[in-house]
Image (cartoon, rainbow, N blue to C red; front, side, top):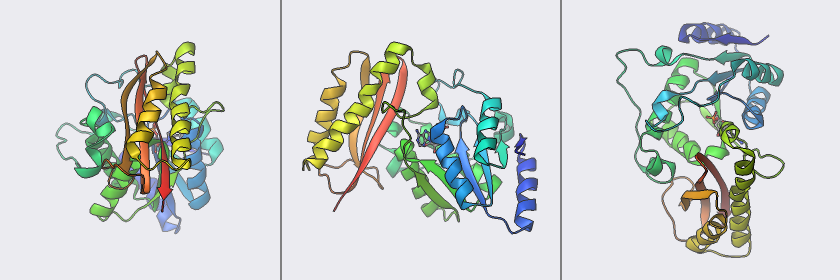
Length: 283
Ligand code: AMP
């Protein structure tokens, strides 16, 4: 039977009992409203660890003042059912006050990999992500933590943070899970009306175009990006925030498609900002 707890103390007590028995622990950090994408992370964690903690926390610190913090979808009962069916053992669902008490004033910040892409459009976002992930790491102290390639920049940022700060946790990347028609699964897809849902297919179609360009031998990153942008611009409901090619690890812009390259995009469909990406590895 899965346990749902709301305090740091309860998490620590539960994990302490597991550790006494010599059990390994995996952590899956989420903002809830769980779908198949999250489930794939939980499945992997269940496969690789004796016990699995899923955190469900809409972290106010990673939302800008004009972003969707208040309307972000929440459904703890459904999340609990999904976690239980997947074989997770503990859900940590704290209130913001439990994570950030009155005097809270310490942050984990990063230069480098946070400068481009979402870091440009959402200036305080990664400071919030790094801080909360660090807190979750310290609260749960897992052996492994699971992150989706859907948020590819976030994954690179977390990897860098773990390396820089000598955090003894293995970061396990998980591939993007998509709807049958190609749209990357996201809790934010619930914001889309039927017309927007259809228009949102332009993101995964742009991914295909980009992949085909690279497969056809194009090594000029700008040309690949331009082909992707040109397609997105054919969709009247779409507004490009960014489409960029960066080095996967440093998240710095590149000109030539060589090594591990991340092609990432953020596109507004109506008022909803969606992200998607693909990675190539060219020797
Ligand atoms: P979120 O709840 O959106 O913060 O996501 C929590 C974790 O699930 C992050 O590591 C995401 O990258 C991952 N995730 C979300 N959607 C997907 C997806 N469609 N495929 C794979 N991983 C995902």
